[in-house]
Length: 390
Image (tube, rainbow, N blue to C red):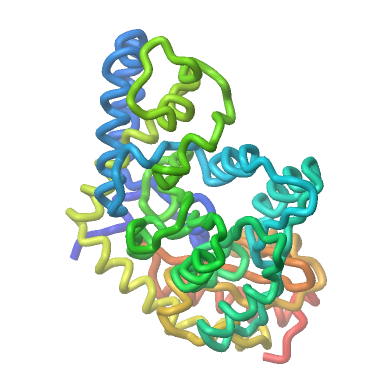
């Protein structure tokens, strides 16, 4: 059996249970990344003017094929936050307009929407989603309780960062379309984690990270916009693509792809990442990782004296899960897990609830989760950091 761990540059002295935050790039893909960087350094003029744009087109086409959309309908961005800033800045919100979201969105996205809504005197509505989740219908009904005549668009995570819950975005987008609403989806955790068919999903706008579960180097994400909407969105950085001397047939690409001197080598690794996944049957590896999550989620919840926040099945969970935690000091608990036990796992505070999230990829094993379990038991016995009955 192939040694998956040997394919990664990860420090073997650390138990890595946080793939969800920043990903981990396998060695063959990282080598591809450095190949592009070397080509750039050897002849920057040729790279930026001639070959680089061709490479970007190839990478966009590979990404489009992977997600069932046209390559010219996606542009690369460094992260989903950058992508959503493009969208939010250009929506031309008016006083009283509302953006409907959930109360379990990523913190950076809450801040982004609050910023642009405050500037326009619009409102960012964080609609409450009841936890634990009981059913898909419950999530959909919870969400649309926030709908008003002033709602102009919906913004929703396909899988939320703090809770690790996969939300029924397909059903939510379908209903939103019936109301004539613009649909904006933050799919940061979806590419390479779950199958994504952008044509079938039919969201107007979708952003995702490739440097998480698709396994590219850091700083590789994308923004998809339905073609008929693309010219609504101005460049976040005005540069050579605006009133271009050599315009393409896509203002969308001109505006958002040409931004002066920058190293876009990470974007060019997408074809290699897709190839790597196929060569190593990563879909099968992912299935094994999901099984580890499903097999261990309830047990880890028991250790913290809590309960799962959703039915423990693949409808709601992928390769990561979040444990509700009662702790006197979330920062100290995370520090303790790393400093003493060399376990990397994030702890989030979302409103009044604290979550410990652990995520699994091919380099992980049951032994890694057992290390977390044993650490939690010892911390409960030796400190007052965890308030749990389990």
